Image (tube, rainbow, N blue to C red):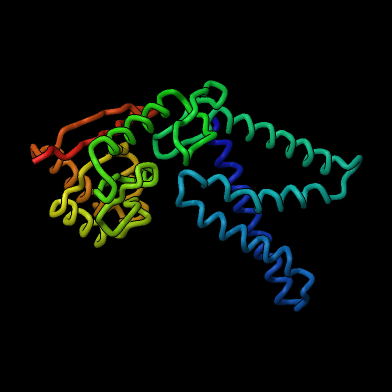
Length: 273
């Protein structure tokens, strides 16, 4: 039900933005008046925002803000008996504010199968100078604590570590970085040719610690459909390189942590020669 609700909002925002863009573009061309530039520019930006956020599972719903705002604005100025359209738009705005706020409490984070529990059930502070003030679930705090502890225990400043596929925060928290080109290896960030280079470099110059998040297969397939026309992405070569190193006998699995919902974060350390 929630999925349908958000899709309706997105479609409404897109339809409203597109209609206003076309209407005001026609008015500008026909009447050649600067009077219509404001709505035209806002609707243009709204279409751009919808397009740019449509590729991101984390912020896709944010693209509806301008388009939906324009629709509600027009609704509030439609002449009607007893100002019914204005009252309806105000009620709808109030409902949206309360609904979206409640959903943010219940579902504070969702990203390709990764979630965080209701904010009202979290009470564990993160023990880090970079994350001071963040209150998260006990499970999430354990992941941050154990991973950074492993890296700091088995490496020294200047040693290389490698995280995959989109968890560069551990570079910042440990002050250890990869000796590869990319900081983030996600599908819409790193092209296939550079991903292949990353995979080769990882094999040739293995990192001291590997931090690997086992992203669900549906996330792989969805991105390959969106960005690779259904073909295999270069990121799979990086995954193969990581699993090859992990099973080579030169690494030991130091931790295998559960990450909501149903994902696993594995941490391997290189054995001393």
